[in-house]
Image 1: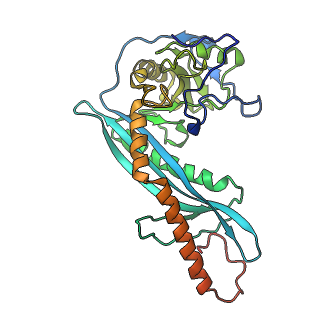
Image 2: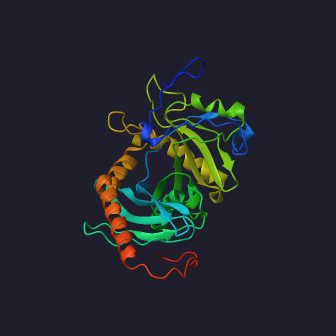
Length: 340
C-alpha cells in the first residue's frame, strides 16, 4: 500500500541524510521542463504492465565519488584558488543465465584538481596513494568538485558502452546524458532523485498515486530520451508520497513502440531488485545490486581518514621541497595548465 497523497501529510525521506533527499522541492523557474506525453493520445494515465521477468543478461552500472580533502593554492601575490583531492570508482554487477551475480568492469582513480587552469602535482605517497594532476579553467568554487563528478560519470559511461556492445541489457544508475545512444543501444537509465518538475502540474501531482509495479504514460525529454515514472517499492506509512518512485529512461532513437515495450518490461522486473530498509538507508529505490556495487567500490577507495592523512603529508612534502628549491621570481605568470 503506497502512502496517502492528500494533505496534511508529513513524510520522512527514506534516504540517509548523507545521500541527500529523493525529492528536492524547487521554485518554479527556467529549470522546470514540462515534457510532452507521447502515449495514450497525449492523455496521462497509470499503467499496470503484465508479464515478463528480468532479461537473461542484465548489468547494473554505477559509480561512487569521494572528496577526500579541500585544497587551496596561493600564489606569490596572495591570490588563492580552491581545489580538491578526491577519488572515484565505477563498475557493474552482471547477472547472467548461469551462476551467481558477479562484480566486473571495475575502475578506480584518484586526482588532485584545481581551478584556474593550473595543475599541482603531488608525489606518490609511501602508503600507496597516488593522484592524477588535473585542472579546470574556471575559478568558481564548484568547478573542481564538478570535474570530479564528471570523471566518475565518464567512467560509468565507458563501462556501460562496453557492456551494451556485448549485448548486455544495462541499467545505468542515473540519467542517460553520458551514454552514446544509438538505435540498438540496450540501456535503461534509472533516476532515483527528482530535482525538478518534468510534467504539467496536473500530471505531476498524479505520479505519487502509482502502485508498486505500475508506470505512468511515457513522455519525451529533450527529444532524445523517452521516460516514465515507476514505483519500485513501498517505503512504509511514514514516508513521503514520492518515496519509492524512480524515473526510467530509454533512448528516443529506439522509437516510441520499442520504448513502450521496454518500459512495460522494466516496470515489471525492476521492483524485484528493490533494496530492503534493514540493509540500505535508501531503500527501496536504491536497487540491491547497485547497493552491493557501491559498497565494493567504497571498500576499494580505502579508508577516507588515511586518504586525508596521505594528502596532508604529500602537500607538506611538496611545500618543503618548493621552499628549498625556490628560485628567482622572474616567472610570476606562467602559462595556464602548467604543472607545478
